[in-house]
Length: 172
Length: 124
Image (cartoon, rainbow over all chains, first blue to last red; front, side, top):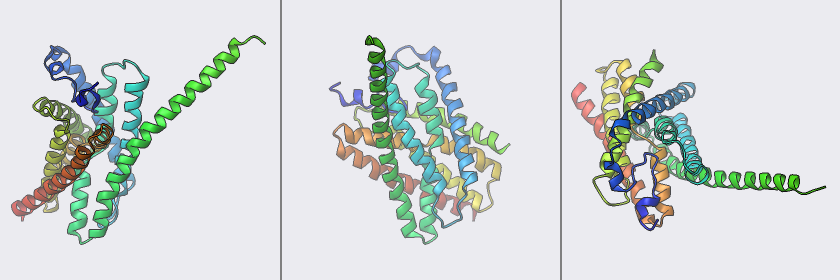
């Protein structure tokens, strides 16, 4: 784990050793592709649902996109802890489906970028800056919260289960 | 019907993000997440073009839904951007983490602006 790349496991699984990319996984690439496509479709439909439920007027703060992106960041933090620290060897399609597919399809950078530009073009410079930097700050914090909260919850659960087991094990 | 268009666009965009990221990350040796940056910038450019064209009446609503909401939305990602930035900072590359934020925001906003501007020039 001295190579920083080996610790930087991205949601897309993009940073494994270079050799891993050339191993003969080609025949099995279709199930990964379809899994990501299905997850992406589900995530995008959920995002569309949120955007439809909370539309924002031109010149107003885009709460729907903000909420979707921050929630997606919270969940990716939690998911990555579950997959890399709790589940020893997750199914090979779990991360493509939940991380790359659903969360990747749910969150969006393009809408965010266009919304900032439109706020600027509409003369709402302060709101544009608040949205631009507010999203980044909230998103990064959400990733951290997702990571830390999941670790704490796991620890607490393990403690409770261990206690319950020892209590059961001790004779009355 | 609208929901179906979103799903169809996303079913193309999400795998394209995955394969673009893998292809880009396989071509360099740094920890910098160029792959995510690439999809986010390209998606922002395409969405800018599309919404600019739609605002000028040059692009039908169904195309905006499928390509804009579905494809561009799923091609780009905030969760990976956020996660990679946190991991970079955690891994000691505070400089890379900060650089990822600055470059992603600047390039993404620039790309979206360029798309809107080009669309304005084409359709008006």
